[in-house]
Amino acid sequence: MEQLADMIDTASTNNFYRSEIIRNWINNELLYQEAVKKGILQDEKFKKLINKSTKELAASLLLQKYYQDAKVSYEPKDVEDYYNQNKEEFIRFYDSYFVNIISFNNEDKAIQFRSTVLESDWERALNIFKDDSSLVYEKTKVLLYAFEIHPIALERIVTSLNPGEVSIVIKDEPGRFTVVNEIQKYNKGTTPPFEVIKTLVEGRFVEFKKENLIQSYIKDLYSNNDIEVRN
Image (cartoon, rainbow, N blue to C red; front, side):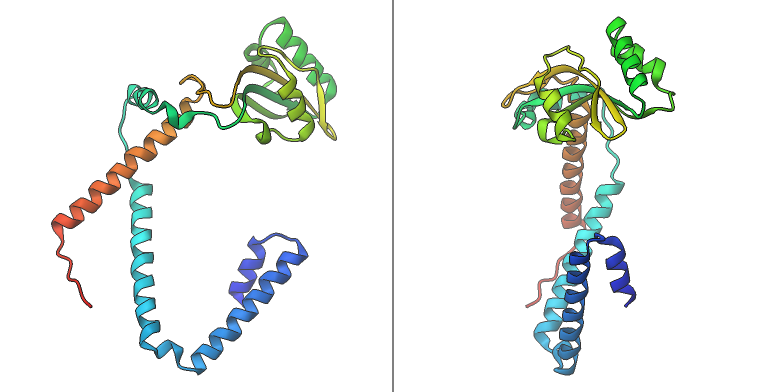
């Protein structure tokens, strides 16, 4: 029952899903108890399947731990070189918007922020308002597909802006007032400049290097261990 309680706690509070979890748990428990009565756990086929699953799970967890613990050393130029050599990996599948977004719970503060941006620039305005208690959300120089922009009212505004344009103050949610600055738009099929997607490229580069480390690790295991094949 403790396992069931944990499953329910981590699941959606939606009553339908809770009922489904409970029903599936009961079904599994009933079938397991019947399998025990029928001697399935002593069946040789069952034991072979358990042994195979144990090996696969242990191997998977070993590689997962190795991947998490692996340290990758590199220079900033290595990341940029990876980008230049693999630009096709970073082609945008849909139109994308490189934007600044900020939201306040006070309309007057949002209006003041927008005015400050128009009088100077986004970075200076942000420095002035960054500690303001009415600021509730802020993202600077973020690249987003249209479907990643929420709510829909905000998406419509962003997709209608021109590069460099600052939006009017948008009441995109009750008690939330947002200002958006579209820095640049990148059309479907294009690859943004390195500086725009530097964080994404770095993440892919680290994954690539770690995969290479895993392959080297497995090769070392081949060299240092004898595998006895049994029927």
